[in-house]
Length: 270
Length: 92
Image 1: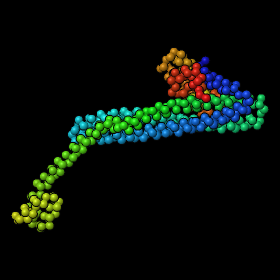
Image 2: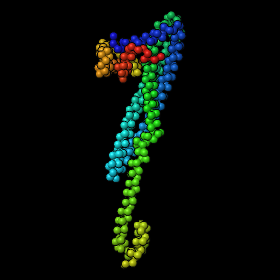
Image 3: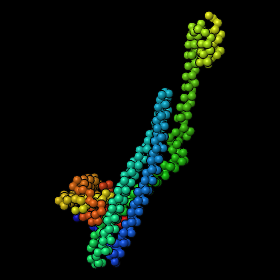
Image 4: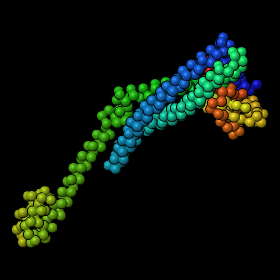
């Protein structure tokens, strides 16, 4: 018979069973309309839930991305300082964080598409519910109970199919959101416990500490070199510059920051 | 005729496409019966592609029930099987 026909029959059978339970066809209309409004509410809540879940994943994603960026920076700094071992460690940690980022990105995309689908389903259902309300009033005003039956059956079967479809979509979205909440909760816990920070930067941010230490000692070395160079340069220059006047001597004093070296040597020999 | 893709809504499809759709649907059913996942995916994709090719979105406020209903594009074979046998899958 084919999959399509069989699925259709399942939907029809469901609508028929509901119709059989109703004694007064007009009552069917009002009751069904109430159910439709309730489902519409549920779908709207579903859209909002999925959006909340998506935003939470987005926040986590940003946080993890910042960690990955930081480790990337550290790897570059380490390499620039000639510490390939540190750079390797930073990149290894970055790979771990990146795996989480990729996973969350997948979840984010899936939530985004779920949100989009649900929101479209909500619009479709709204259009049908509006059409049903109009049809319901026409049927009630125009037909006797007996005449109304076939028209009610068709409208009811049509809206029941839509509700079945949307109902399944909502259930799916709820399942997915529950899954995402559980995973997002796990990551939040990781972050709160500091375990993720440890993964990112070691128990005491050891890479950064090493970089800072190297940075500090590198800074001292550089300053020393600079001073040595200045002293080496300042001696001959001051000998040449001396006849121009004592104000030059004062300027080079404050610039070099080495007062002891200056006046005696620069002032007297010439 | 009106054809529904679950999760996506209804399409207006010309009756002339019915024969070809039935052929594609037979392949889908056979894949489900044989429990052949690869063939199932191919058959569902082919059926959906055809319906989308020949169909156009039905009016949103059309209350007529669909003549044919197609499982959602990302449905698993198990979900389709449940859809055929277990009416509990449809809520409400």
